[in-house]
Image 1 (cartoon, one colour):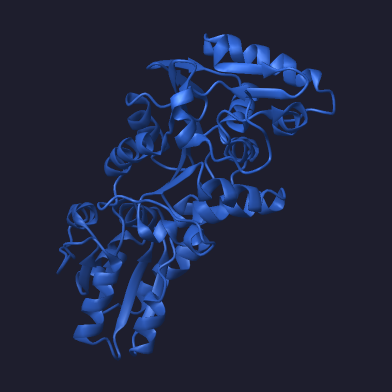
Image 2 (cartoon, rainbow, N blue to C red):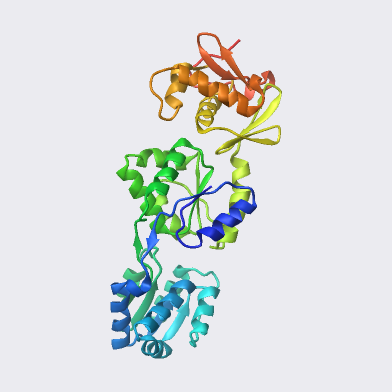
Length: 374
């Protein structure tokens, strides 16, 4: 599993590892410390200078961080005094707790924890001439601010999180390489900026099309909520997200979704399932080196059909023109699988998965690129 989260990455990684996953952590962003954020300071002074009629709080950690940062600037009491005079709307139960811990009281919170429901309520009540302080939380809120301003509101955005590219880009590059190589079963996203940062880096490396193609089928992009998924959906990539926008439900969703995506192949009297970085043979998990996984995926695209050495060579990561590299990687793959007869050598032609005869009807429709071995 790939984890792109900057904060709460340890929590998400632990939840996945407890369920047996291997985790590749690559924070796609870093968060500017609030006390160093000049934009947040300016917004805080603006709200203190002119009190809002309504304040919308979106995340617990963001709201707490805002109050703590204001305290550090010597503006904490002034900020709380302004917020006490405002109607406070909270997106969900966690942020309600943060509001009450600050000595404030929220007026309302949507049962759905959806910002869309918050927007509907504000527009139904009418906001013409009202000043609204909106705690931003790093993810885009499509149409939210625009709709309020179109309805006559004066909206002050409070940028509680400001995202920057990671200082060390190497983990992100490793994750992108793993996505392209299909050695990950899924990549998790907990914020839209993380998605955009990852895709931006893929574009810089000339890998964007390859990454989107991998997300299109082989690697499942799992988002914590629909807003997080927007940058991928805008590029035509389908994603999954839990009904409740939390890390626990996200992990539970992966536990339900991923097993159903694995194709079980009957090969040489064995049941074979190809996972991201390993193969399950008759229920036993067998780790396989990356080169071997590349070969196995190339063979599994057309089970039972002969795949030429030249094509397998192209599937190997970082190899040149020597087909001997295929033979070396194939020997290691067979050893890793523990069942050498799963893959047959077809003399002077290539290799094939030894698909059981009774499976021919199911898997026998090749794409015209190879021949069945007799």
